[in-house]
Amino acid sequence: MRVLVVGGGGREHALCWRLSQNPAVDRLFAAPGNAGMAEVATLVPIAAADVGAIAEFAERESIDLTVVGPEVPLVAGLADELEARGLPVFGPTAEAARLEGSKSWARSLCERHGIPVPRSGAFQEVEPAVRYLRELSPPFVIKADGLAAGKGVVVAADRDAATTALEASLVQGAFGRAGRTVLVEEYLEGREVSALAITDGRHVAPFAMARDYKRALDGDEGPNTGGMGAYSPVDFVDRPTERRIVEGILRATVAALEAEGIRYRGVVYAGLMLTDDGPKVLEFNARFGDPETQVLMPRLRANLGELLLACLEGNLSHYRLAWAPEACVGVVLASSGYPGSSRTGMAISGLEAAAAMESVEVFHSGTVARNGRVVTAGGRVLTVTALGSDLPQARERAYEACDVIGFDGKTYRTDIATGPAQGEP
Ligand code: AMP
Ligand code: GLY
Image 1: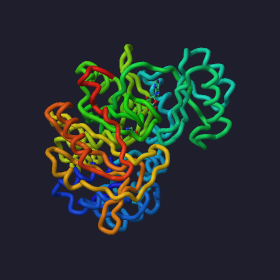
Image 2: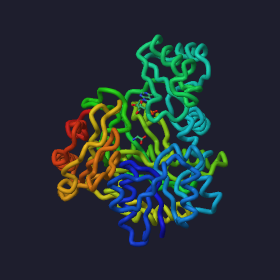
Image 3: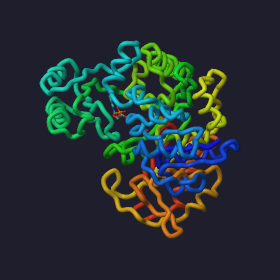
């Protein structure tokens, strides 16, 4: 089997790592990949967003399975382009990827089908949006409708701040086309959890629950980032809550899409707030999460390549995903300055020593090989993961491995997965 993974982050490295363990995968390509993926895959210098060039490559190389990591090529129609050429692809079409590509579209889908969401309204003009604020109490949440690389959400403390955020998006165009429509929504209190499932459009294979850390600094301070760490399983999600999430949200969403005539194949990812009133959907993603994938893949007890193919063939009903009982903790090592601009090109030491540590896997994000050395090439550089018999052991192992790795400007959160052991947040 010839497999192409599209993307070049930690998520794609974790996917490649699992796929490469499958003896049926005899060729594995990654576009564009990174220095870590080069150890298990052949790198192809094509940007993930270059839909036409990726489709041409897949056709030329007779790729049996393309796995699309990031949202941008999905929303731009990479799956449609591959399907039009008769090439199997894991990931939704552009129409189906609206689940992530338009928050207002996803929100109204939920409302039509009784899937729990915060109260919200969608607006294209400032005045009615400001008027709608009267129906909610502060703080207010203002969201750009389209893809904004995780930067399109503002929590506004009061009416003035909300008005400023609305004007930034709708008048000043802070998020470009993505912000021409905004959602104004009720602020929810609770703990966040990421619920992922694979679906063939009808059957749903839920993943183990995961939690990610979006803020840059310890104690959930500082700006939002692409994710600074993750862990799985999530000890504060009990069995009844998990069942409610799987049935009332994941399965219900796939059923809603099917009922509306939209064929959805790939990952459905619901970002949830666990409120006193039950779990509610903050957002959907149409792909694997990053860094959730880095802590889920080490726990997955299944052949990933077979699983993805079963999904494409509509045979997911035969699959029950099993997860290792061990916990997995992932800590992101970033370049100083991230999520703002950061210096790159710093040599990274200790990668081999870290990878040799017990139960440790190091997944690369922003890395590149230069003159035989691995150097930094982005804000998020590595996700250092470790399995352990429980979260404290996994955490201890992951942080020990973080200490062994060095590069100029290395920064990371020191509190990943500390919350649950201490009972807080
Ligand atoms: P999203 O991209 O929609 O997941 O939003 C990014 C982050 O903003 C979430 O992970 C939450 O921490 C926060 N957030 C989004 N919507 C809400 C909401 N309605 N209430 C409280 N926090 C929210
Ligand atoms: N971990 C959040 C995301 O992948 O969007």
